[in-house]
Image (cartoon, rainbow, N blue to C red; front, side, top):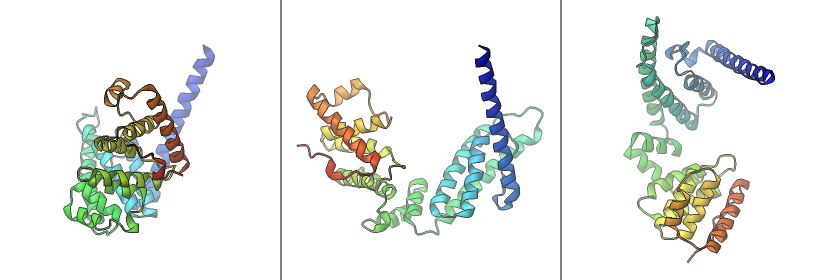
Length: 272
C-alpha cells in the first residue's frame, strides 16, 4: 500500500513539474517573441490554459512558416480558445476583479483575430484557402474557385480529394465514391482521415452495394470509428454467416493496405 502511495505521489509530482515547466516555457516563448502578442490573451489565468498554450505555440510555428495550412490550423486553435473563453467569461472570479475584464478583452481579441485570419486567406489563391473559406465561411466565390481546380494536380492530395468528395455527396454518389477511394490511395499512413471510411460506408450503402458498405463499416470499426451497433448491422445487412466471414476478411486486407500506404482502389471487389 505504501509503495502505491509513493508511486502516486511521484506521478503527481512529475505532473506538477511538467505543468510548471510548460507554463515557464510558454512564458519564455512569449517574452522572447513580442510579435506573438501574448498580452492580448488571458495570460496568468487558470482558465483556458491548454487551448491558450496550444494557440501560442502554434502561432510560433506560423511565424516560422506562414503557410495557408498553418494559418488555417491557427484559426482552428483560435476558435477552440474562443469557445473556452466564452464559457470562462461567465465565471465570476473570487477577489480578482481585473480577471473577468481580461477574459472579456481576450474574447474580443480572439474574435478580431479570427476575422484577421479570414481576411488574410481571402487574398490567397491556394486550394486549401478556397476550401477553408467555402466550408467555414460559406463563401460562394471560394467554392467556385475551388471547383475550378478539379482535375488539376493541385487537388491531387488525400485532403483535397476528400474535400472535393464533400461537394458531390448530395449530387453524384458514384463520383463521390471514386473521389473517396482516390483520397485513400493518396493517404499517408501516418495521417489517415477516418472520416473517409464513414463516408464510403454511407455512400456505397446509398448506391445499393451493401456488401461494400459493410466492408467499409468494418474498416471504420477497426479504426475505432463507431457507425452502427451489432444489432443495427444485422438489420442493415442481414447476410449469412459465410458472407460475413468473407467480407470481414476483405475488410482486414484493406485495412492492412491502408496502414502500409499501399491501398489501391482495384483492391475493392466489384460486387454484383
